[in-house]
View 1 (cartoon, chains in turn purple, red):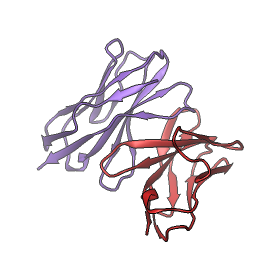
View 2 (spheres, each protein chain N blue to C red; view 1 turned 30 degrees about the horizontal axis):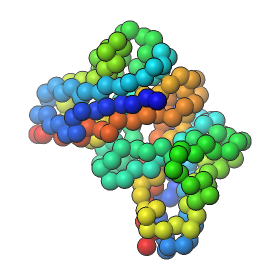
View 3 (cartoon, one colour; view 1 turned 180 degrees about the vertical axis):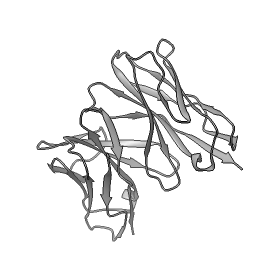
View 4 (cartoon, rainbow over the protein chains, first blue to last red; view 1 turned 120 degrees about the horizontal axis):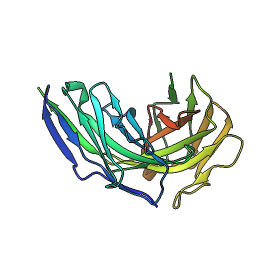
Length: 115
Length: 115
């Protein structure tokens, strides 16, 4: 079975600064995806970024980037130029390939962006 | 693209009644949908995997006779909470697997309150 661990229950960052959220996972699978989802106060789950395990290049989406270390089973999310709208719960998630399998979520990190 | 809707967004019902929640993929066909439950300040807990045209696969501890799932078309899955009780009060979220992307997109959730 797969497990996902987010060791930072809460974090805060000043507006315009950079913050990194940590995520580690455990699996015996070799072919999988990793995701970061954001859940703002509205509770709508929003995909932030996706990484395929077979790709060595780290995924980036505008101000969001990941540091994927497959051997260490680490998948951290870096948010640059933090904005007030980034305030949310962030969930790291694992999914085996093919994609018709459930996501395995971490417990989440609550990020507060302070003006 | 990749929009998923849920209806209703909020429902209050009396104990002993049944409630149906709909999950629709609006701009893509989803052979696989997932139903999650989320308690306040917690992560998402998978309830079941719903495959179009076949029976749902329930997670251990989830009563299949209480939480009826029907995935009758490629764009609609329904969750019916039968004989609801106050302990069933929760936030229910669905997700749909977008084809060729191996990525799940989430509905906005349904808040169920059983009196």
